[in-house]
Length: 560
Image (cartoon, rainbow, N blue to C red; front, side, top):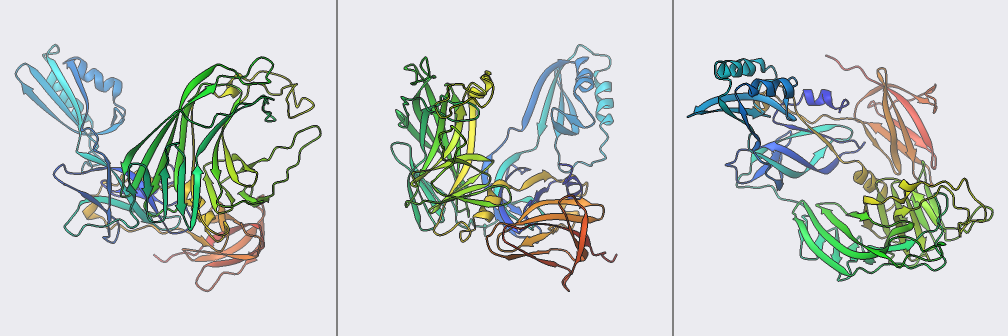
C-alpha cells in the first residue's frame, strides 16, 4: 500500500489504479468496485487512450450500509465513538441530509462519493447535527448510512511492465467491446479455446490444452501416516481412501471473463490410527472436499482450489495428476534454479528413501506443469503421475518407532497443532502443454499466476474529466529464461537482481527508461565494475547458465 500510495494520490477519484508487478507488459483479470449509475444497463471500463474493455458483473452491492434507530442525544455520541477523521464504519463520510417526517427525524449519511472534495469539512456535518438535536434530545432519529449504486466488475486490463494504468466505468454503447478467448461454462465442463476441463461422475477431471490430454486428474488420495515432523511413515496396514461416495457439480460463474465449476465430493476418512500405529482406525468421519475449477479468458491453465475441514489425525492427503506418458524425469523450480530429478532417491543412514521433493513456483513432468502458490511437496509416482501433498497431519516432533527411520531424529515431544485439524485451503493451477517447460513459457505463466495485478482507488481531488490520464511506464526486463528476483531503491539508483533460469547462456535486456550509468553489485550490496550503457540508454548484460547477477542503475536526468 505504501509503495503505490503516490500513484493513487495522482489518480482522480472515480478511477481505479491498476499496478503491474511484473517486468513485462501484461494483461490480467482484476475485480474492482466502482460507482455506476443505476440506469446503466451494462458497463465497460475505459483505459487511458480511450480503449474500452468488456466487463463481467460479479455483484451489485447493497446501497444501504446501515440503518440505526437512535434518540437525538445518541446521534452526536455515534460520531464521537465511531468517526475517525472522515472514516465511519469503514467508509469515507462525504455528505449528509437531515429530514423530518412527522415525529421522526432522519439523518442520511452519504459515503464514498467520488465527486466529493478531499477538503470536505466533516465538522460541518457535526455542527448541523448538534443544532438539529438541540432542545429535543429524546426525539426519535433514524440514521441511514448509504452510498451510491455500485457494481463489482471483472475486466482484463492491460498495464505496462512494472508500471500502472487506470480505469473508469463508462456506459456500454452500441458497439460493445468483445472478450477474446471467452470462457464458456456448461453443466460439467469449462473451456476458453486454449484449455478445457471436464468433470466425470467420480469427480475427477479431463484437462486438455496445448496438444495434451490429462485424464483422471484431481483424484484425492487419503492415507495413514505413522511418521513425524521429520519423516513420513505409513502404517504397515495402510488403508487409502480415494473414491468419494457422493459427487455434486455446479457452475458458480458462467463467464465470459471468468468461469467456475464447484465439485463437492464426500469421503469417509479414518479418524486416526489404531493402537500401536500398525493400521488405520476403523472409526471414520465424514468430510466434504470442495474443489473449485476456475478458468479465465486468455489463460492457458486451469486454476484449482481444494478446500475441506480436516476431521482426522495422523494421515496424508494428496492430489494426483496422471501424466499423458510415462517419464523418468521431473523438473521443479527451487532456489534460483530449476532442479531436474529422476526416479531414484537417496536417504540418510537408517532411513527408507522417499521420492517426495520440494517445488517453489512450478513442477513439470511429461506434458503437464503445475503452477504453485508456495513451496509445495510433490512426488513423481512410478513415473506416471504427479502427486501434490495437500495436507500432512502428525502429532510428534520425532517418533521413536517411525517405520521409515531406524533412529529418532529428535525428542518424542507432542505437537498437537501439527495434526492440522480444522479448515484448510490449497491452491494451484494445471497447465497442459507439449514439449519442455522452457519451450512452453512456463516461467512466464508461473509469474502471471503468482503475481496478480494490484488495484486501489484513486484519491486525487480533480474530477476524471479534468485530468489527463495516462499509463505510467516502469522498468522492462526481458531475455530468454531471465527472471527478476529483487528490485529496490538505493538512494537515486535502482538495484535489481536477475536470475537466468536456463542451462545455456542468455542475455538480460533492461529498459523502459534511459539510464546514465550502471555497475555490478555483489550479494552484500558492494559496488563492482562499471557496465556499458547502450546508446538508447538501456542495458544489456550477458548471463551464464543459472547465473545470479545484481546491478545498480542510475536513471538519466530528465529535462524539465
